[in-house]
Length: 362
Image (cartoon, rainbow, N blue to C red; front, side):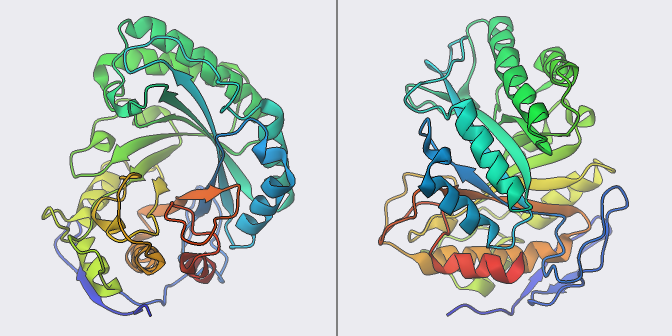
């Protein structure tokens, strides 16, 4: 059973304030650059979404894919991310290419985008580059950076063109390239962004920066001023407990197991980028005991625990719905194509107690 009350302290730039973590939120706030929040929106977020994922060439375009897309829409989300992944050999490689056995085809992507649009959702296309040997993209340091960026630009222009032709509302053109997103490569990123725009894509542009601690990649991305929506892949550790309550998780957002005040850190970051919406392009928790201690760890071993996932979802909404003038929403990671089976410990909330939390807050 999850609790819907608790107290936490979230310092602002002018000093600490005490916020009551309840399930009631003024939902009439608006962003002058976008649209008025519908009164029925409990979270008050402008971006209320989930990222749809597949690592199969045609899975999005199957009956199971359509069932999954329709179930995603039924959560009340207004945005859906759509993932597509291409690959390079390892962290030092310079060539990016599709893997025919794992990369969704363009036809499959168009099928998913079309179905999600038919369900009245806006779409964020999210192309990833992964390493064939399993290296995390945050460790990518290509042997020839110029060659890598040329390959990356070709990769992104392909998907920008697909996004243009299918009226995709947002393109998240990079994710967690922590070794490559700083000032040393600003000229390269400027060229990538220009190439995307020159392709004719006119939707929103976002980049998803790694955010697992106070000074992580999101604080040093060199091109935030060139894009429309600032994205944080927010996998901040919360408590050191394997069975935390909702109040404990709420408190951890302001004082986590590493002594960090994540709310204040994100507030200060958002205030340093006025006029740019800040969203969590990814945030997620597995249905496994201890997921809150290391949300980024997709290999974490533990007992099946859908309640901890549920509690983490509830705490996210309790905390960040009260910061929605600065933090404009999130796209949960993630929503799979195959319906999860009993005992599933992956990130998807589908058919799990966390799905009810989504429906309550979206």
